[in-house]
Image (tube, rainbow, N blue to C red; front, side, top):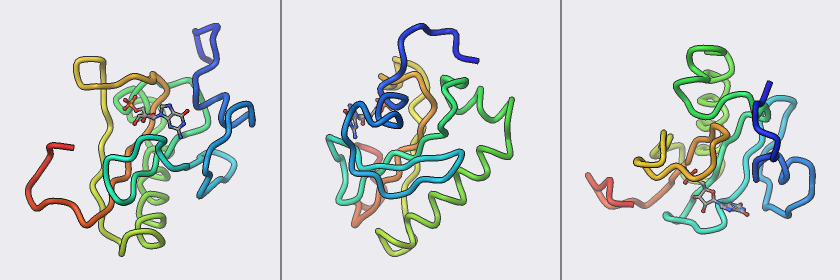
Length: 118
Ligand code: 5GP
């Protein structure tokens, strides 16, 4: 159960209150294009539950849901960027996290070789 009174941006997107370019949705996960893409393909893959602020919490509490996120990432990468991708979970403000509702950044190429700069 979320302890925050204010719905996250992602919860509002799921509710249809904020428009998004949705590329995948099932009962537990939604994925849509990042509004400020950092790569030719930049998707956010988001568990619908607002219970977990970050991937550490998700992994500890519901590893099956994390595994499902990874499976959907691969499916989306197959569809959008040749099956190859970079996966980023910003975890904490010092790591650049701004939305505290766990989400994966799926970045697809071509990406600069060896670069983690974006
Ligand atoms: P974080 O910084 O928390 O890891 O990632 C949040 C992401 O949400 C950022 O990459 C940011 O560009 C994206 N974002 C912020 N506002 C919106 C929005 O209204 N719509 C979409 N589709 N993405 C958003």
